[in-house]
Length: 281
Image (tube, rainbow, N blue to C red; front, side, top):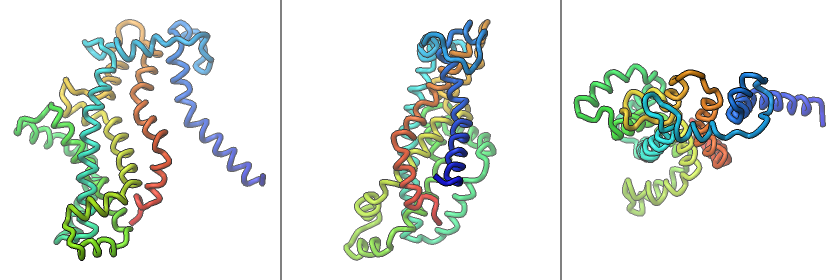
């Protein structure tokens, strides 16, 4: 144990405590009753475990005029996230594969335009997209919000898949071409089986981005498909009488549970995929 290693461990411990402290306060607050929250310290342990705030947040918290909890938003988020993630990854993988190996005419220009779209603030596209979806009759529907997430996810998905495929030996592609493989057969039988690490990276990124999205769900999903983040905002800002901090904290933790679970389950694969070429090029 050298001085440098002790200092490194100390820095890691301090950094971990700094980032974990808000989460600890949230959990402790969600397990306390309101009188205990008012009379005690935010860092004090609960006198007894009170899960009533969790039950109310899930099943009976008011999100505006409706008092059905955030479970409605949870299932809406699931319905939105699953097809949006699958479609955006599939489109990004195909486009990244085409830009890496087939080198169609104008591929560099197309890639540059996609990159430009990845770094432009999507708020500037909201009004034109609202008008466009309204004209075709898709605005405020489930299909609308799924298409929107696919559109905004396509640039970054194309970037990471193109960089990953650019690191693969071109001899594999040439050999498949000599054997008579076409566009989709080479992709399905050669490229896709080697893409497991980057597929997991893409899935983690898209699930997290889509699940945590607020503004796109608020603008495009419609009242019947509002995601969990919008429902959480409605819970926190719908106050009748006393503001229930334990309820707010429980609803926040429930909303963040899915991205946290995804990271805990597949974090090792995420690091492996990054190292395999997700940020190369």
